[in-house]
Length: 139
Image (cartoon, rainbow, N blue to C red; front, side, top):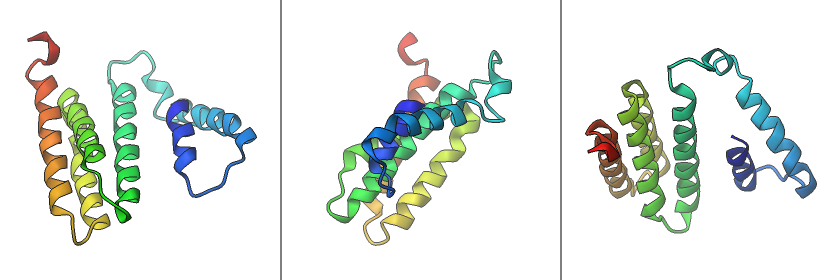
């Protein structure tokens, strides 16, 4: 969690002083690990916490790709984000709700050129979904 918070700081709009980055990373990790939905799930079998890591990674990758899309759109981060969202949906079907929201974010951000990124995201989502659903590395 702290890794994601520190990498998010590097891409944030706010200017964070270099000496304050470890402190803000620690504060973000404490908030993330002590949330109302996190503490009761420790030791439970819901598997929400490990899946949330992949969802947050996918969101961060997708947001950084969409932010850079104003200069030139790179399809690789969109493929990775789609694969992560698909992997999460394949591991737990109730997490499939994040993919339509991500597609809508792509469409809203790239108003004129959204077709190719949306198709790439969907294909990567399908591959990521089928991998754990079909048995993954256990086949």
